[in-house]
Amino acid sequence: MTELTAPALALPNICAGLPLRESEFIRDVLDRIGDKWSLLVIGTLRDGPLRYTELHDAIPGVSQRMLTRTLMLLRRDGLITRTAYAEVPPRVEYALTELGKDLHGVASALIGWARTHHEQIRSHRTFFDAEGIR
Image (cartoon, rainbow, N blue to C red; front, top):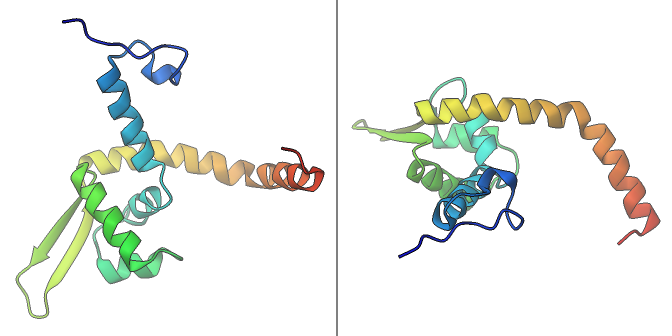
């Protein structure tokens, strides 16, 4: 049986030449870390473990439902841990794994780029929207 490979022109260069199954998985991982909340959670946990309420309070605009889902998916990917302590009242903390810390290092460069260039991008968007370009 021949293994399908991803067409080089149909996928980003990072997936070119990889078997289709691997390229789909890489795109899935990039979708996860590129969603609206994942990098914010990763960045918020950079200084150490936090409880759910602390995380929720530190990330403006995230709903409880979305934070819960994001935490579950980050745990599934091995980027964070959830530790429940047998205390009264119960205490649960979330922390970055080594994999999550590694991702934070990589994401910091992207965040830095966005912070450096956000005014330029805002200006381009304003121009684009004002011109009615489609």
